[in-house]
Image: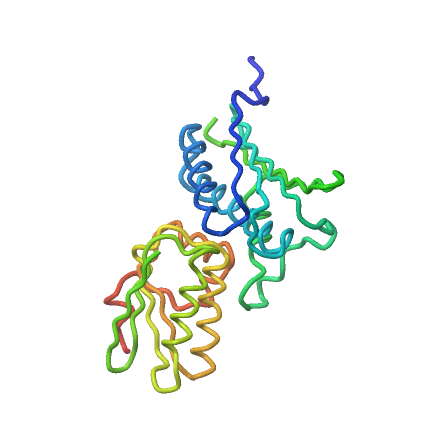
Length: 144
Length: 110
């Protein structure tokens, strides 16, 4: 039996200024890649949502506001999964404090982390680098 | 993102189209806050043409819901596409909002 390939076939890198108006560029790229790789519509929508929420959190929390500083997205196009690394140069996140809120508490805000953790198979915060944060998100392609 | 307001005698209709995200939701919030008043406390939101909604869009509608509740009014959402329904289900807010399949159902009893 042939082993499924897990390493990247290709890599796409996109850098946008950390401004809300540019998030649609990241969403469009993620949508196109997931479509090409044959993700089902539900998974495609979920990956777009998770990546978008993660980028929004970089603007709102890592940088604290819109800025010319970059959000760097590196997307590994793999045979059996979607894998993205989002890098920013904002303040360090306290990984222990990044938790989804209780959904019974109906109030505006705080749903982004819940969305990300609900829909992605792997969510890893890497803030060991001195000047940057990296968030790794992985979604398995159930169609493969 | 585009928005259109239709004012009726007992309620307002807000028709949204396009992406409701971190960029556009402040514009939606501003419009909603101007529409919900003590004298005009019922709001129907037509989401038929909304192609994407993130947590900031959902948060804006939660704020609208709280404001209509505070004014003893009603907020109804209708004609959600599957992708938008999924976002509400993911946040379990599909049980909190009054969501209708279409305009006809949403208008009933208003």
